[in-house]
Length: 396
Ligand SMILES: [Zn+2]
Image 1 (cartoon, rainbow, N blue to C red):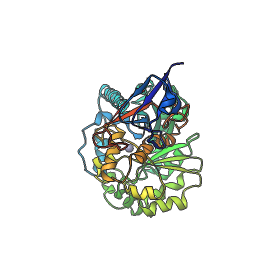
Image 2 (tube, rainbow, N blue to C red):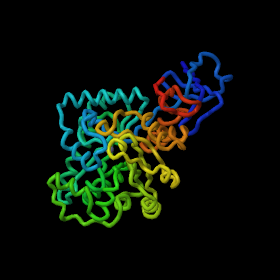
Image 3 (cartoon, rainbow, N blue to C red):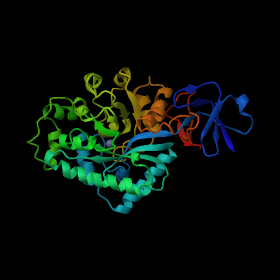
Image 4 (cartoon, rainbow, N blue to C red):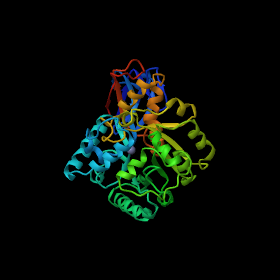
């Protein structure tokens, strides 16, 4: 059997940064055999400058919106952003397909090996069938009018069925998920979370404070959204609860949930999770700082999330709200804003934590023996720390 041996200044295992020089040994196909000392490694070691790291896991993307790159103005706020996506997402199918292909290639070039991808359509299906990268497809349903729930659910289930039947991967690679608390009625929520086999779910959570305002008291700028959509929401009786507390009761103890954005998540929200989330419900918090900066200019309170022991993962969101699909760029934004976050922590979110959240840690996210996570090289680092100048490339 042929082996490959890699050595750089530092090696990040998916869990921690090894500072003593170590050699990563893999099979020719990239299956991890061992991490050994240079003395034990023998000959033919490929030597690099920088940090070796497992492939990145992008926990939140909308690949099907890739043709919208640069279309929407920055920092318009949530309501105008949502309306712009709805109004401008239609395009020529060839252009949509071409943008999807380019965006996927871009992710591969930036070291991403797996994606949690939101799907409202089957536009990404043919590209995904090529099998260039691993996807968990989150088939997303939305509909705020309770009477329309069954019809909306059926439409999304049709998309789900197409992914499940045409996509040559197990059904566990696909889930039905709710879009956001303000766009999914209680009826539709129940249909989604009770859908058989639906164990891994995700939802956009507290992307802006206006969302909390609407969920708590039915007021604020979100009213403009429904008005612009011509939706009569006179039926709506706000729960009095903030977004996160309001959505938790819909989930079950055997499910896992990735909460995306969390820009306006506060201490009281995390306390409501600790006090009232179904026992056993596994929760991950996905940060998409590039998209937050693009849409509202606000970032989540990461110190708060860390201090509550939240399991954090990273996402790029879509090219409608980001300039690139690159987790290293997301890490750099977090480091600019929170210089106290060290590279070891951030790489853990981008690798092992992401793989756990997408339930792919038996193969991806770490250099554990037997895994096949891809091998990245981070170059132009300052010792074991990522800087603005750092670049990523995949070496296996
Ligand atoms: Zn999103």
